[in-house]
Amino acid sequence: MAWSATTDLNSKTLTLMLLFIFLFTTFQSAQCEQPSSSSSSSTSNSNSTSYSRVSESKTGWRRIVLSIVFGGLTGFFAAITLACLIRFFVLYMNRTPILKGPVIFTPKISPKTLQSALSNENQLLGSSPNGKYFKVVLDNGHTVAVKRLEPVDCSAETQRKSAKRKVQRELEMLANARHRNLMSLGAYVREPDRFSLVYDYVATGSLEDAMNRVRMNQLQLNWEIRHRIAVGVIKGIQYLHFECNPRILHNNLKPSNVLLDAEFEPRLADCGLSHLMPNLGRTSSCYTAPECFQNCRYTEKSDIFSFGVILGVLLTGKDPMDPFFGEVSGGGSLGRWLRHLQQAGEAREALDKTILGEEVEEDEMLMAVRIAVVCLSDLPADRPSSDELVPMLAQLHSF
Image (cartoon, rainbow, N blue to C red; front, side):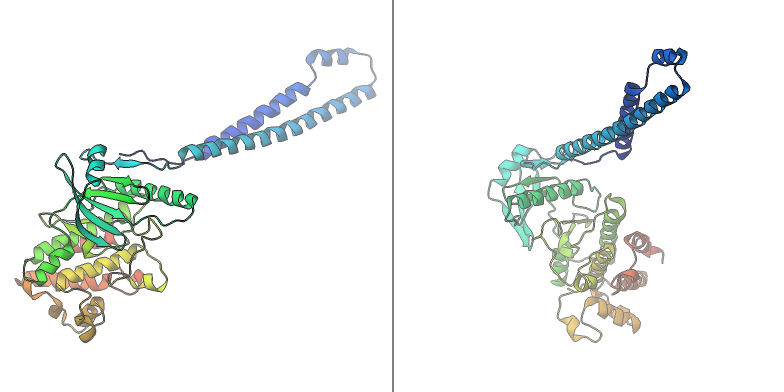
């Protein structure tokens, strides 16, 4: 695991240190000004008048008070100055360094083999608005998928360094996210103007690829497999929302970012990447929640809306961008169409005919349609949380 810098300053220790310095300085000042016991003894035994003793006593106490005041102020300002210097030093030492070369998070990858492999011509797997994916075979035979992010677009050198430090902090946080339904970050490489992210290579492809093959009758996915995919996706979202500290919003959930292994177990990719840099903004799509268009605010309920669209795709087999939704009654979007059919008592008409089988499966799918419609509610408050959705979907077989 790569070294990650933190800036945690213990406030209680700092407070005790300031109090100690203040009391120590005050005590020292009082000790320096207080008259000695021998002088007090000789004075008490002298034959001076009562008026002289009172006058000297007042003068002595006045000096002691002034010494305490000036000593306390001096100690206070000295403590503040020292605390500021210590804080500045700690912040300077703990700032995130701009690392060069590969930063590795898994023993499967070595820096030398990764650097050597990246310098060669690699197979392009696909591209998106925020980068391109490449298939890279390392010298040890291990195959990885590398996503090369778009360059950091900052004119000033200080802004560019600040942006790179921000990306590094986010990437190290994402590398700590480990779950069977997430694509774990294995390494990253800082190049002069961009970052390259390294993940395990998944040969099966994405959910988008699988559903396209289903529509072309090249692949059969029964309800059991589609249900497993839906449960795996929401479990990955639940981990990001409730078990990560700090929590992570996926912010770009769609079938192309749901990768499937050989057993069709889903693994979420691109978690939390869309807000890393200014030019990595998430493009609007039919998977984007309506509040993102209205007030540009993205919350965990926005991830739930995107999941609702994915669940709708699994149930209907249809592409949300299909012109079909603009032509049918109650259409306009996959969510509105599903809501219209459910209210009309015709939810069965929405189900993918290729997976309709036993009556028990049909009942489960109709219950899943209800869940999808709730997830696709226009108001975020009306959508369930991922913590609520996991048992709802996992227990469909019991209905």
